[in-house]
Structures are given as structure tokens and as C-alpha cells.
Image: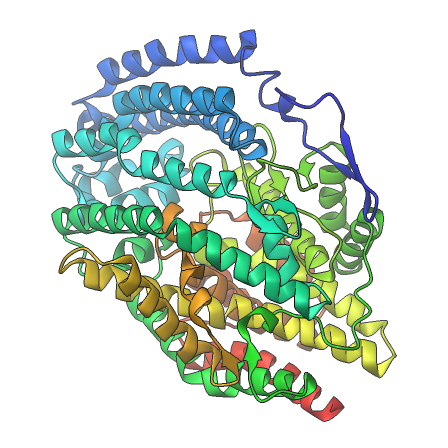
Length: 598
């Protein structure tokens, strides 16, 4: 159930909103939810009985009508699942919510199994026959969705195998993911007589006091280390599960399935990964040498990687100021962008405060086009938290604008899903930097931005390199937790450079990264998005006239266009090797400015 209060208050940051999920359903026992669950199953069965085995013989208009009916069913499914997921994110450790979440997933899984035939059968229609049907406007509307569905054709299994994999997912990958989430949420990290949640403990790694950072870092390493066998088992099991499915489907590499789902070519992703890895010495190695010098040491301990600079006053940014800062930056770029963003604050579409049991990190959940997105934050008043708000609000605004494409075509591939979020961050940062005249404050801000960009680009490419090595080795047999830790330290040392000392407790820090569990190989999308936005922002600086409208059109397109089509109006092409160099050059420029400031 939702809390009775709309606002949670923290002495340091002031009142913060907690989301109101009633726009999806009034409660988990509400008549509206029970009605949708009760009606959905017979509707799905009736749809299957009416359409299964007949799609190839339908006219273009009839097939368009069938897809429209399928879309309506998916909209209801999406609403129910979104509600269950958001309710659970608000309190991962509540047993009643966990039971509701799992039961709901199992019921929806059974219902969606009835609909599984639809995309499988669509993919068996001959290209020439489908092209003929697409002459009808009712079907032509869904051309982008059909393009994406049919991209899976070479990797599609028999109907019976697809049904088996789908039905078993609730007792397989989904169950292991749930175990990971509940374990992380339930962990407590001892710190000076307190028992901290994972977000609270991680937050201390950017505390002003070096002793606090060290003590928190060692506590984190010790707790993760105590649980390493469980995390190792989860990682091994899910990697093997993925290897089996990839092998049956015929994917050449572990990353290939993710690339296909992102509708981006393997060679484009390979070029991104190679460009970033080649730039490690000129980016992260260079910056951390500079930071070590500022701290007066030859090598920084790992708990100082995200430490504020010695002269940073560590000012707390209250929630109302964070809100006005981000919306003002959005408004200067586009009043329409800011107007959409205001809805998230005014209508309780955000859950901002930290509380025990709440999911860590931050996300924007698109839910369904007939509703609206929701944002989850763990806001604690740092400038980085303001940037996180700008980031997630960018996602939310993107999702609102794309909703017009409907339930089947609103979703954006991950490589483009980070565009609006990173662009929102850049707008906010540039606005703050432009009004800062004090050289010391300017250096603090630039250093914070560089660290965020390194975390988004270098760190995420190191993450995907870690995943590649783990998944490749797992094909030869189970990895010990010790071996996974060795791989982790190898890729971290390569990416972060010799100016950082990565001591033994750090070998356990791979365990808490949820993307490895929830969505393997997701992480390169952050680097893709950051480099893309750097290039996009450079285009904006070169020519403001008409840029905002072209940008909003990019967001409105949702999943209907691929990256080449979306970037063409801006004169950009991700397949061009120079594209990545241009994006990475923005980070180099910030580091050069920091070096000039001393």
C-alpha cells in the first residue's frame, strides 16, 4: 500500500515527494486491479483462438486490426506489471509486497504465454507477402514494430521451445534476479554503531572526511565478502542460463543478443568499446593522476576515487533548490521540456527519499502510454544527486514524449534511451557552470562533471569488458568467486590506471552492480549515450536555431527510428569512427581545463 503521506522530510534536504501509484491502481487489492486480472486471461485466450494459425491469410487491414488488439492487451499487461514492479521497488523486503509481486508475475506470465504465438507466427510470414499487406495504412502504421519483431527471425526457436522458455522464466532467471534484489536490499553495513543500507553506505564513499570514506569502504567490502559465495552462485547460474539460450538461438557472442535488442550492429558497439579502451590513458589515467596530486599523494586509495576535492565545502543542496535548478536549465533550452518535467514534481510521479527496504540507485520507469512514467531516486543532497535528478527527469520526459507512439512502439532501444537523460544532465551542468565565476568552485564543478563522465563512459566500458570476460570464461565451466574477483580487479586496474590503489577489499565490489544481473551487457548503453550526447551538444552549440524542435522530434520518435535515422538531422553518424572520438574529446577538453586551473 502507498504511504499515507505525500512528502517525506529530511532535516538536511527538506521535504521530498513520495510517489502516488494510484494512477496505475488504487491498491494491490483494489477492484480495478482484480477486474483487469480477471478479464485479461479470457481476452488473451479468445485472441489466440481467433487468430492463431490464421495470420498469413489475413488481409493488410485485418492484420493491422489484429496488431491493434494485441497492443491493447499488452497495454493492460504493462500496467499491471508496472504497478507490481514499482510497489516492490518502494519496499523490496516487505514479504507481503514480495508475495504480491511474484504471484502477479506468475499470473501475467501465464496470460502472456497465450499471446506468445503472435510474434512467432508473424515472423513466419514471407517477406514478399508481408510487403504486399503493408500497402494497407492500418498495417503500415505498425511497420517499425514489425521491423523490430522480425529482426529476431534468425534466432527464433520452435513455438514449443519459445513457450517453454517463457513459462520457465518465472522459476529461472526472474527468480535468481529476485534473490539478488532481496539480498542486496536486506544487507546491512556496520558503521560507527549504525546499520546502514547499501545506498547509505555507498553514499559515504563521497563524504568529505577521508576516515569516514575508508571505514565505509572497508565495511562494504567486508559485508560483500561475507556474501560472496551467494553472489558468485547467482552470477554463475545466470551466465550459464544465458549461454544455453544463446547457443540454442545461435547468437555468435554473449553480447550479440543485447546488440540485437538495441538494434545496433556488433561492429558499432565494438568500435565504441575499442575507442574508449584506447582512450583510458588520456582520460581516466590522466584525471586520477591529477586528483592524486590534488590530494598530495602518489596513489589514491580506492575509497577516494569519488571523494570531493579537499577545498569542496560539501554544501547540501535542498530538494526545492534541486528541483528549481534542473527545471530552470530545462526551461532555458525548451519551455515544453520544462513544462513536461514540472508534472513529475506537482503530481507525485517521483519517489525521492532514502528509506530502509527501498530499492537502491535511481531509475525512470515508463509504465504504459495511457499512464505516465515514475522516477525513483535516493536523494541525499549532493551535487551528484542533483545530476541524478536531471538524468532521471530526462528519461521521464523522453518517455512522456514517446508515449504517443503507443504501447508497441514507445520503447526506445537502450543505446538511445540514455540520450535524453545524459542531455538533461549536460543542460543542468552547463547552466550551473555558466553562472559560476569563482575559479575554485569552477574547478570543483568541473572535477565533479569529469568524474561523472568517467563513471558513465570509462567505468561502464570496464563493466562490459568484465562481463565479456566472465561470460566467455563461464562457457568453459563454473568460475569461483575468487576468479570473478580477479577478473574484476584486472579490468578495473586497466581502466582506472596506476594512480589508484585497488586493494583486496575492492575485489568484492562487482557484487552490487544490478545491471550484471537484471540486463547483461546493458552498461555500454551509458557510454554510447554519453558520447552521443557530447556530439549532440556540440551540434547544439554550433547551431541553436531549430535545434530544440529537432531534439524533441528525436524524443517523440520513441522506438520507431534507428540510430542512423535519428542522428541524420544533426549531421551525426554513430557508424563513423570519428563520432566516438568527437564525444570523447569533450571529456578531454574538461580535463585540459582542469589542468590549466592547476
